[in-house]
Length: 175
Image (cartoon, rainbow, N blue to C red; front, side):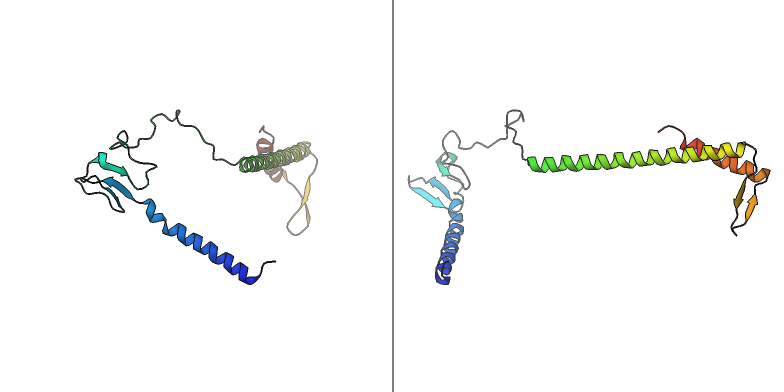
């Protein structure tokens, strides 16, 4: 285990390296050109307008010295995207997880659709059975709101048949 003083020294060294790194950033923004006397000039400001482009050796952020071939030229993006290499910036594990999530969602939708089809088939079966029972002509009784048993008259039977037929029409049709 390191002593607290060695950890402090290590931390101070890391801090010093960071400060030196940050302090050297302005050096990257340097201009370099040759003046009319042939002397090389270094500055953090652009050269005066009377300095020709061919005399400028380095610009801030330029990869290397300015040559006669590159002096006064502008960087242009390639016109055809086919000439540039295609770099995939997708994470394979992220794609796999997204695909799994899609498959789980599709499976859930299929399960819900299956349950809905099953419920509709059950409703269809019950409605057809009740409609057949009403059409048989037997006396049909049901309980009213008070819990008393009452027999359906012809008008109530016809109303119930129309209701059950509409249920059969909606629940027994195809998907």
